[in-house]
Length: 143
Image 1 (cartoon, rainbow, N blue to C red):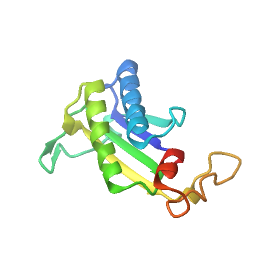
Image 2: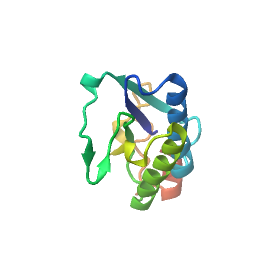
Image 3: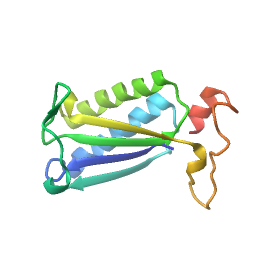
Image 4: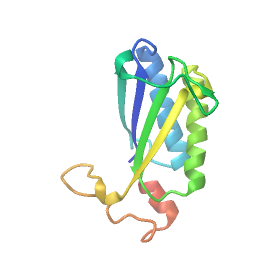
């Protein structure tokens, strides 16, 4: 169920470059989390400078106008090692696909309970899918 929100500065990314970023994000989610390829939900925000504000540097990282802010929301329950692996896989893939500095991908992961998601019809299709009731592998595949 991952929902990816990709935020970039207006004028830095043409359609082809955005498509490469989008593909790299989906590829990282599929390969690291084991989601099916058709589990594809993305929102791409192209923002004017007045609405895309950030510090030029933080924690020894230097950000350019190419900064990508990537927000991921998915159902909770994946091990810490999987989430850390996802951060690395996404950075490697997006940096290569977009031709940006490894510093220029800021990733936020939001984990939510399955009962907080409806894929349609007002039903919480993943409400009962938790690590307590299923094996971690089966849960990760479905979420």
